[in-house]
Length: 408
Image 1 (cartoon, one colour):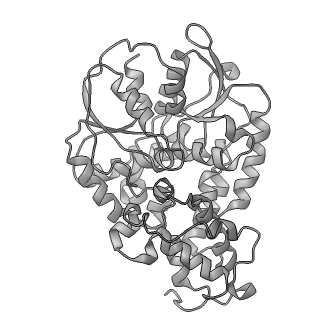
Image 2 (cartoon, rainbow, N blue to C red):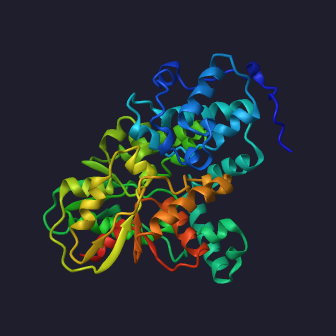
Image 3 (cartoon, one colour):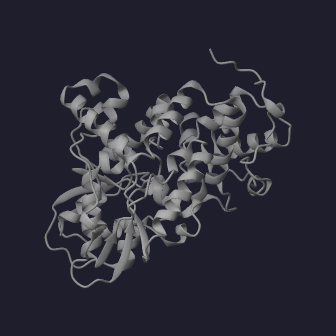
């Protein structure tokens, strides 16, 4: 059973660690409440304490020593998805994403990681920075899927069907198709090569068609986004140092990323590399693609990944690219900008709240009767496909790059 009372911790449970949210960040909130109806957990619960404003108030009073650090307080921070929808509607520019990451780091410093979060932290540290281990886990998972074993547990049922691993081309460079206009670096990341190799293949092909020579930094690793989102800023900083050195090995115009959460983390957390980082669709819209070579006849809707729409403010570019392909019937779902409930590890750590948030998303999505759903983040893909399976629907969910690549 969870002890719901005050937790006996160092420093009387007051924000005193090096990663505690700053007073300047916390003081930017003017408590106007415009964020409330955009917050997924508030929409589900109608509780002030499950809103951005409520959580900011709790952290502010905690830091001032006017609230004790309790498990109840920590749970309100645990239940935040970190989707940053509130940032996009905040008139005061509250840096909520940074605040919640630092708040979680302080929670874990004070209470210690809960059992399930300890497992998550250990798994992240032992797997994500080690590509060879991830490939081995992928190979074992493929065998387990073939035997039907992964269907026995909820997390296993969320996994996509695995079929091979993406590997960088020989020599670490994919040449431009036609005249070379840019030299870009490409983030391969951690889980994407194993879980969604077809997304990488399509993304690189689109970059080549756009006149890019694509370089793969040979020593690049996981960007650290999942670590930061879950309060392990120490591991996130270590990965930042390693990746910054890896990408400094050669010159390039931009670092292109096809995972919304990773791109947002790089832009926010990496200096100076973040200034050269572009989301794939942000870059393609700026650089331009040639006219599509063929029609793609499908009725499609688009789910905004939170860290693309709210953290990076990239919303119109994916839609413009979709509409540029002849044959596509694009239908906008209601509330496309509201989180689907995936949020990195959230669906595994907080499955009940994640499922409640997904329910609203599935109602919005299915209301427009799509033949295909596209998005731009691996967590969203898995969450939405899981929602389809649980409802007995066979509508596929794909990365937008895959659909666009069909036109070329």
